[in-house]
Image (cartoon, rainbow, N blue to C red; front, side, top):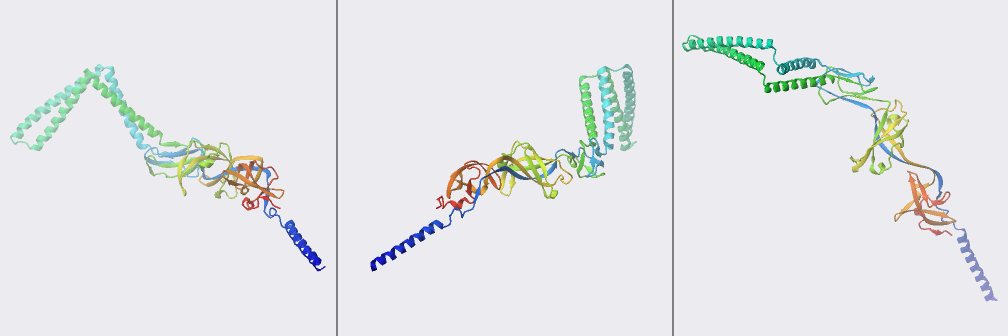
Length: 409
């Protein structure tokens, strides 16, 4: 009787222990339910790249000093100008005097060459003969006077200074005779060498004339289009030298942002892509933009990380106002791709292992790894092209589910 009682007590205790463990297992919290999950949803996603740049006018006229001279007139900075307006004038008085001299010289050379080529008129030849005879008479008189005074000097009747003065007069008459003799010979029988020399002299005079006329044409500079003076570095009365930047005129109706993007982002750029433009100088305003230019090659630039290959591009500002100005810095956010009704999950839900991308799928209390193929992504979400359907649940932090993969019960 006593043994039967012990057996009953033992059996009751055993049943109580078994019941405790069954209750503990059955009602303990599900580890899956304790981990945060998210559902795959359908939505729109876009991929963007951001770059910094500076606002510039698309159409710009830079005026460099065309010649050396004194500024007579220049437009003021900020002044509106119309196409064809005079925006710079350099004093041309000295150039016009030089032009008159060169024109006279060129005319003389043409006449001389024409005389040699067409033959000498009788009147010209007679004049040349008379001049030669007069020069010969003057020379003979000077020679006779010099010889007589040489004798007087030898006798001590005149000073050396007096003799030198007479000698100079004699030399002058002798040179004059040589010139008249040469002119007469050329008129009587011009040679080919003289004609060639005259032709060279005429070409030189005409080249000088063309150069001066070209300089004169540069003393007045006109506006090439309607715009505003963005920069003015000279004032009336100041001297300028060739190559100095004097003015910049820009068209404020057409603005663009010059940017540089790294080679990874450059591969995503396409003409016509839309952009949003913002900047500290714009306040809370933003402007629509469009990619209008992409450089055909990359260039190397120095950055804080060292040398980096970048591609230059331009984003045109669409429908801007007076609050965005040339020279302002700007941030450009370009939409490089977008898709509607895509399967999306948060970016942190995807892990990469051994070259493949995976998520931790939660289904019927189980956690399992599943390989997925991704598409577009941005700072928050990633598109799942293959591997998930709308409504599928995945762990928000895949690393937390690695220890409970499988049946959670």
